[in-house]
Image: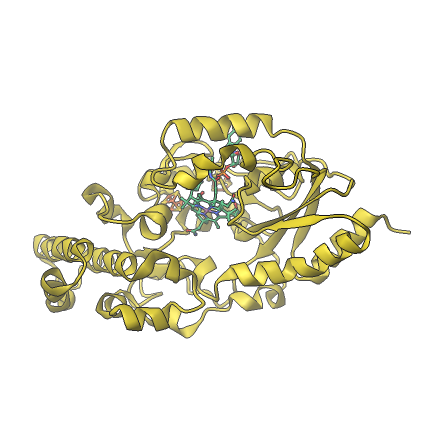
Length: 352
Ligand code: B12
Ligand code: SF4
Ligand code: SF4
């Protein structure tokens, strides 16, 4: 006879999660300290919501999460696809790169759907349950590590042995008393590849990221002008960045059934439309392009800004007429600034 915890985990795998683990919701002491120091150093940049909800993030039994919480079920969803464009090919996109997790549909509804049956089972047994899918205030990586789902790599990502770090996390917080798993003890060893290869040198220490320098933050979360010194290192990234994960040896040995990652199959608009198309889009076209896609978060202005920088970095002078036009006529001062920078950069490089 399997225990209730085992039944829940088996159901999680049936729903499409690749791993499930359980932790008790006792205080996250070391992680909470790390998190507070990270906030105090200002590494969160303009993501003020992280500081505003700091207390809840490390305490799932906080009244604004689930006052009666006893356990958390941590779940991993794999998203890397065999048909993802080759990250090493400069022409993978035309031109410009979008992080793997964003090639397909917005993942939030998918992850919520995958939690439904689990919450139902918990409720049928008289428990209450709340799902956290990225947007709820919980320190998801730290809880997942405590639940033995994987370990935190030097790149700050949760790495699931056998699967890698290309996973999205989901938590189900419940008042059920579930059987906790032990955290796992493997780690990065002597490897430092991610720290060395980060294009913007965003890691201030192992597992400590200054988000203000991270391309993912700059291209997705940051509104307004991007600091000029960080534009060139952004290279081809239009939305998000995968460098510190794509160099990781743990992502070269993964064995995930492609059927599980089917919802993340690249959509044509994500792989066929590139920086040039994005820079041309007006609000109405962007609204259609980004419908149901993660790119919507950056907005037309953010995506056009990123696209202009990528075209400047691309070195192809055929983009000069478009960049000059946007530098003059784009309704956004942020995009005009980025396009003007790109024109100057192409002129300075003197390439064709
Ligand atoms: C804000 C945020 C960002 C910010 C800041 C990222 C960061 N490293 O802090 C930005 C925009 C830069 C970002 C980027 C990305 N993100 Co993000 N992000 C979040 C979010 C909403 C909050 C993260 C947070 O609280 N950061 C604060 C830092 C301090 O906490 P943390 O990174 O979670 O680290 C904890 C543990 O690693 C541990 N820890 C780390 N170092 C140390 C050291 C010591 C000594 C100790 C004790 C503990 C410890 O404790 C930390 C908390 O204190 C979470 C969702 C969530 N609700 O948690 C997603 C999340 C972390 N992001 C995710 C993803 C997929 C990404 C990207 C890969 C997207 C992309 N391709 O562009 C990149 C990866 C960049 C990177 N290397 O971290 C996934 C991560 C999945 C995974 N396998 O780890 C999450 C969990 C979303 C999800 N639901 O799946 N993200
Ligand atoms: S996502 Fe890119 S920019 Fe951010 S830390 Fe990783 S390699 Fe650096
Ligand atoms: S690249 Fe190396 S150091 Fe970085 S997370 Fe992977 S194993 Fe750890």
